[in-house]
Each structure stands twice: as structure tokens, then as C-alpha cells.
Length: 202
Image (cartoon, rainbow, N blue to C red):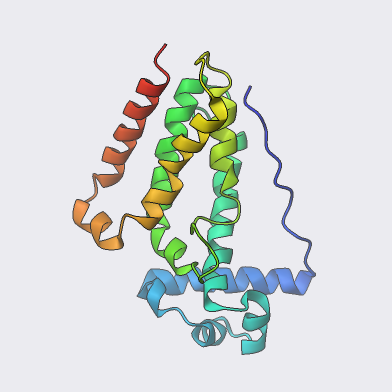
């Protein structure tokens, strides 16, 4: 059984604040789906959601804060599938199978949300992958620990993690992803599978 990681529940909110947050995030998702991430503004979000501008600014502070909140929300859902979802992504499969399933799921997740991740950058974030991104390294390290590799697992986990989150979000532009076509995610997933098989070869 792999190591379980508890990031804790989201910070408690007043009922009205929590309700406004959900309204704003749902509205932001609709606006992004309709017009793209680059068209989303703080004032536009407030108007579309039917809330005051002050509410939006208090909640998110900056435009990047909207995207950070969206990314963190998506990240928590992803984590739930990893920690308690169906195998092979969730518990119940062999560690090698879980490693390959995790990489494929993470690649799909990062490509799907790449525009939001880039928009979350505000000059302070080095890697635009949500505030909960340690899940990659911790989860990969836990699965590697179940294999007899005779390697420095801490370093290996860091290296494998760097093959996922950072490069996909920082080095693959939206144009690159679009021009590569629908099979790009599958190609990246196959590359991850090949990497894991080679690294974990007995």
C-alpha cells in the first residue's frame, strides 16, 4: 500500500464566502470555456457573476489569483483520484503500474489546464502547477520505495517529477500542444511509460 499524504482540508470559510467562491470559480470556468483564459478580467468576472468588484478583489487579490484558485481546485480533485480513486491510478495496483498510470494522468491533467497554469503566474510563482504540486514527488517516491531498485530514491523521485510538472507547463507552449495534434498527450504518455520501464528495470 502506498504512502498516504494528507494536505488537510481547505481553510474554513464563512458560508457566504464559500458560496461566493464557488459562484466565482464556476463563472470563471464558463468565461474561460467561452472566450479563453486571456480574456478573463477581474471586473468582467464580477459583472458576469453578479457580485461586487470588492468581493472579487478581496477573494483573489490579483487576476493571477483567480487562476491560482482554479488550478488548486482542479489539483485537489486530481489528488483525490490518486489517493482514493480506482486502480491503477488509485490504490490496488502494482507500484510499477501505478507509476505509469500516474504519469499518464498527470500529463493529461497538465496539458488540459496549461492555459490556466500559465495565467496563474504572477512573477512570484516559479512553476505554475498549483500550490499542492508536492504530490508528484511524494507519491512517486512512495511508489519507488515499493520497488527493489538499489538507487537513491529521493534523487530519483525528484528527477522523475521534473520530467512531468515543470517541462510540460514551462517549455511546451500552447502553440506546440495545438500543432502537435490530438495524439500529443498519448505520445507523451508512451514516453513516460518507456522512461519508467527503463528506470525500474530489474
